[in-house]
Amino acid sequence: MRMDLATSPGSPERPNEDWASVALPASGQGGTLVVLDGVTPPEGDYGCEHPVPWFTARLGGALVELSASRPDMSLAGILSAAIRRTADAHRGSCDLSHVRTPQATVVVVRWGGPADEVEHLVLSDSALLIESPDGGVRAVLDDRLDRLPREALRTHASADALRNAEGGFFTAAADPSVAARAVTGRTPRAGVRAVAALTDGASRWVDMFGAGDWTETVGVLRKEGAQGLIDRVRERESAAARERAEAIRWKLHDDATAVFAEL
Image 1: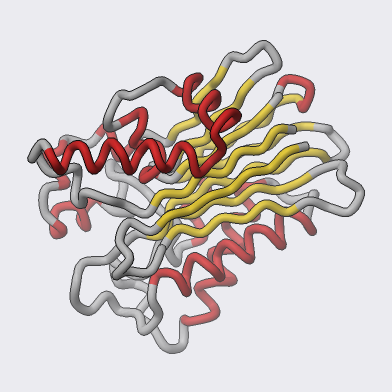
Image 2 (image 1 turned 180 degrees about the vertical axis):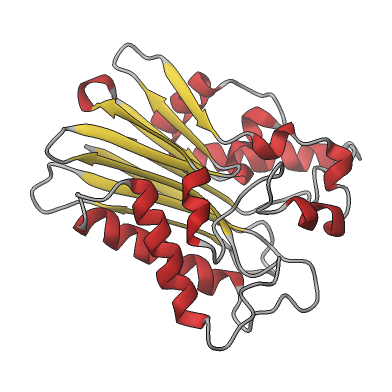
């Protein structure tokens, strides 16, 4: 079993709002992978006294602990419980009903257990890649954000109207029921050679720059490691800046995290 993890802030002046962890039991028979991409709020009040990294660390920690300790619970149930636990940690001091309350995208993978399966959960625009023994790669994506008209997301106000709303897109914030919106599934362990989780800052190599496909992404991760993929993204971003290309989404550089696990 091989694990590789790398993360890079989008700017040295700002804290990295991504969060990632891999947990392996002493038996070596299973494991859990969690990747979160904290949503950066616009400047100004967002109803909470805590920064986004505070939120992602607590939500991520709860996801890892519950995934490892509660094999009887589904990943959607675990996400719901982790959201509730995190919300309870600051419910008394913060306005959790604020549309911009701290929130994050989520990828969770768990393998092993009695059924010897690989379970997955994806919420919002981080990506999960599942490689089969024959080298085929399947991307598990929650594409609701990508299906929205770009004009609908042009301003913070219009994006907020679609955030965690019917017909819009969903993130893990303070409402445990959002877990039911996640993309989930199971694959027999024998049908999985490797998995990779990417925040959208790392998946830019494919979905923004078109420098390769998902199969090639797994190849880069295997040969160059998680940092190698992030370095490729940074090179593309710098080239776009030099060419004075159109602004990349909302920011030129984004926090980027990649985790690769060969099972």
